[in-house]
Length: 403
Ligand code: PMP
Image 1 (cartoon, rainbow, N blue to C red):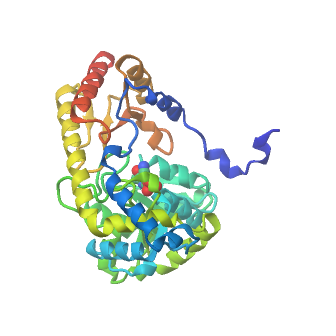
Image 2: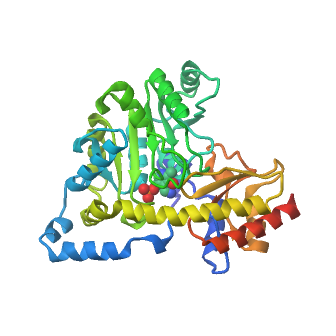
């Protein structure tokens, strides 16, 4: 059967990337991998999970945990999130919070909620690959979100009309972004809000790494800046997406959305139609752990990742040729390297796997138009300091040979 004949058009933009094929090689044990942006499993709070799950099954909560439940999510967890959001400058109540199966599901729902074919999404150039993956299914057009660029709201609106739709949202990974590691400063956040106000569009604030700040001063979320201006979350256009994947464990698939009630109410309908609810067992376990131990867990992982970030930056300083530039993230998991123009990240990866046994992700994967070929993303979350030093040394040697 020719399946392409029956697949809906939305599938045409959902392709497996060549890079993912290359990265399959990573399972080989001698590879030093800076590729996957995933947590170190040694930092999962396993004892806490064991205690939480055991408590659930020896208490009368086990029936609730295993039964169907409401789409909005487990109320005590939503309450806890509402309190956390108030601490971040976003007073809200439980009905402003929806639990999702990871923040990735929130991105999918937001695509479904906002994008009709040919509508425009404003995104970073580069941006989070998984956001492109989530939005692509809804057949958008992409335009560059440049907070301090010289294009006005009407320039953006005109470009969207020319593309056959309208601008619907600006999407930004705000703190220690995936892939660049960079943080939007307060002025950039204010500019994005002002642009969104002028265009009358939503802002999708991806705060997946928000808790992982090692140093420097925390910057209020875009949603907090907007609440400060407009007085109430119900007047706000920003949709905040959070996650427990980077702080507790991604395998749980517990994330959340915080937004004005009409947005949450519509997303609840999408969730009902999609998976009914996020596994209750996992939500209850997360609530038990964060209730008493979130601050300690976050402090523990920040210490480890912070030391790895330091090791990576020190090694880059020592080993990279002069014509390579890189970001200096204040948190998160990523450093972004810009190579000389004539170098290609994908070709370099193939060489690096072959001769250096070092892996990373070529930067072009993160650009909606496949540009940015002379960039690469390095993650410092998985390797210890000595391995980071060795991997960067090998990469530096390769770049000196090829550059
Ligand atoms: N947003 C960003 C920027 C990410 O890097 C990730 C995970 N790689 C996600 C969202 C999705 O994470 P999760 O679904 O596990 O919450």
